[in-house]
Length: 152
Image (cartoon, rainbow, N blue to C red; front, side):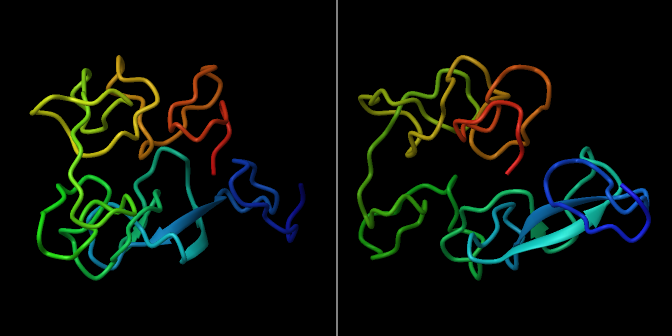
């Protein structure tokens, strides 16, 4: 670490001693909280606890960044020929149990009520789901990416 050093994104270290860290964000043109996975952009921010910069998201996953009604938490609408919830299936509605009420379902099917995604890796804790920031040094995979205590 020294002034002028190259910043390494997503390691929470200020290599160039400018008081900021480099984080990978995703363009979020429709401001629905989910970014375009094909638009990673490294931006320096003051600290990991800050909000994403305007028109960016901490999270990729939006399959149509021009329409805020289409994102991983949207309900699938049958008959409109659109993958509303970005799960790769068009006009297919499957409901999953969301025991912790965070909007992300478990792998267990629900009979009638439930959410239309099965993305939750811990359906007993509403703070753990795929579109949350990884909390470092807690020994938990907070963002369901299969990696404990590492961002992006």
